[in-house]
Image (cartoon, rainbow, N blue to C red; front, side):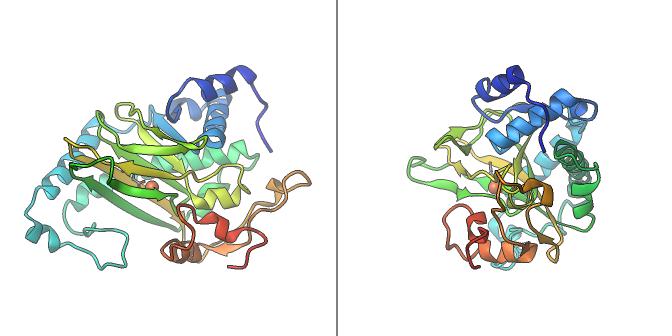
Length: 289
Ligand SMILES: O=C(O)CCC(=O)C(=O)O
Ligand SMILES: [Fe+2]
């Protein structure tokens, strides 16, 4: 269940980037070579940066302006929109700036669907299979705000984790990034490409693909001088959907690695904190959960 290997391209993708490789959405829509690039990026890095995604610069700027405006409000004002402590959304999303959030997330959703279709094709399935699992999707949109920190060597902005999603699409400031991803045992700092979205494989895809794509741990460090904002859309199947490795990902060389699990359970266990960083080992084939 894989595309033919093009050794030159594989080497280019593995060796050239010092951070997640770039993948063009425009090329993805019409081409085998870009699909292969996507496949290698997901296998080797679990991350890639999507370019030529067709999202308007003005829209990207609008959401950045709205978030900057919101975070500069006095704390008492922001607290009016705070969510309960067991929520993942932070300040309430259905309140302020709803129009711009909707316009932005609609566009990111479009991009996510194209990537899900491409993953289906890469795995020799009909285009609609992965998007079909997300007909009723669970989505979360989160803006992360990291204030400057006097002791960045001692303080993390976000501790190491993988995402309980199928796919996460993150927009960040162009100039600075404190996103670091686990790669070959170390932490690799991001190199942002202007207006690209950083996309990562979530736990759901790791399970569905039987570990062919891995949801890679990542973290955010802090910066001594500058604040930073990042904008993440998490896309996941509905909580009632059960996920397990797809039949054709299992064979004699690739035994089934994960049990069947309901998406809600992934969320529940993620907050239990038993396994540092990654959640999927909890659902290993031979582990009770
Ligand atoms: O801010 C970042 O760069 C990372 C954000 C992230 O990993 C998350 O929100 O799950
Ligand atoms: Fe994350």
